[in-house]
Amino acid sequence: MRQANARGGRPIRREVKLTEFEDNALYFAASAAGMTPARFLKESALSRHRGISVSERHELITRLHQIQGAIAAIGNNINQLARHANAEDALTKEISAELTHSLTQARATMQRVNDVLPSLAVSPEEADAT
Image (cartoon, rainbow, N blue to C red):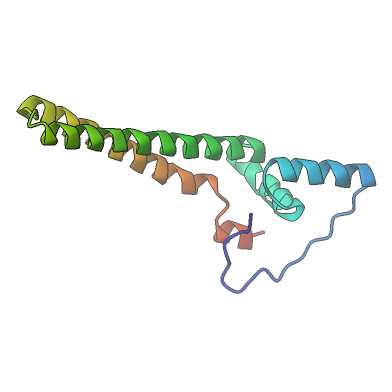
């Protein structure tokens, strides 16, 4: 996956010397994390001060995306139930209130997930600081 563009580009280069074994290990670790070896090295180094490894961050991001999908499905189901209740003229004030509350909760949870995701990524500013 490509990184976000950084204003002014990334003019600084670092050279890392590896054995063939280390290079292969780096390649496979980066592939498992869905990154290029260079990005994996950079994010691994930058993540140390956060107290979370690249693989842990990758797992968290994956799980949060799964949660987003589940919440979106719940929201769709709530909308379908409301549509069905309206069509059958069976929508009581209690059912309407419960559906509204459930949809509000699903939206609030989705927003909390959306708020957390950016904190798990390496920002262009952090990338530029290295």
